[in-house]
Image 1 (tube, rainbow, N blue to C red):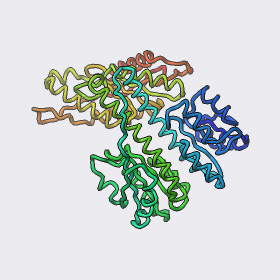
Image 2: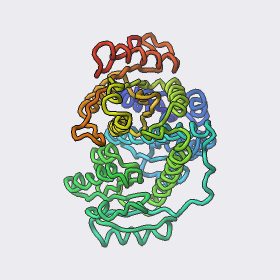
Image 3: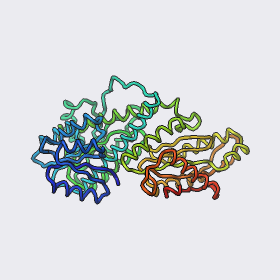
Image 4: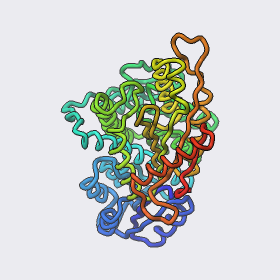
Length: 464
């Protein structure tokens, strides 16, 4: 399953229609007819996304959002509302209350599923950083929250200077942030390494081909080391559901499909700025609070002290959601021979370059830790056995292809790695697996990889 979605609507046929569409996309669906039932379902098991009607028998989407904010921090549980075009005032009120987006009927399936994927992806990323912050606090390493939040910075990106200037003039009296203007070709080229904007607003031209070309900027912003964490709001000047879904899948955080509206854009920008500020604070906590105590000083990877409690949290989260996660134990082959032949300084160089290779070939949410001399632990949340096997095989191939540069030696040193792999949170019979059991399975699989020739991936038998 890709995630759990709670549908809240008083009309049963609406709930059934949505359930059919979402179940076909491999989402688990639960239902409620009003706010009271919805809160009961949320307390029973927290969903990944709430999709609700804009109006409900005992309130509306805005009221539901306010109730949820009493149980969850801001933006931790996304809410997607569905309404009609004659509910313009209710739509803005819902956005102001914290609803992530309001889709209007008739629903386009492509846009619905694209928005669903985008919101759940953002929720999962936020959860992962929150888990890291929880680990930091459990270790007593968290820093106090900052009392002062600096003014945000938004960049409006549009091909037409007169239009974008008009937008800026209407936004500035409403927006509590610094606002600058940019042409699409300059959006990345003119971004300084320091003082990177918090949010980009990308206006797509009405022509479909030109709009698709403009969407390339989304990928470029997400790939750029300086702008990848910035918020990104895409504005469509002409409705196009397929293009909207593409923009979301490429990495847009939010979307306006009906062109520019100053009040709506202000609400969305304030929400993106708030989300960016929270994410920056979590990342800063992880960087500064953990660095000295829970990072390996040689490789810069997390050490065992951090890895074990964080693995516990990943396993606990997986038990709650039913999503799989992969555990790998990796060990460099014949590492003692490298130390004996080239010296311990060479061995250290190999460890440092191996750590960098592992980091470069895994996702930001994955945990990579050095837990022994030449032994590494890799944990991949939300990853099935098949996906983990592909990732592990890629790591083996990349390590084997590395040319390790060692000071004092003209020719590079070669090395390989063996990996043992296990997947939780349950075994083949659906029984819960403890972290200790998963680690033992991965260790046994690693031993099997070593005894069968090294430089390979072996799957744990119980999980396979």
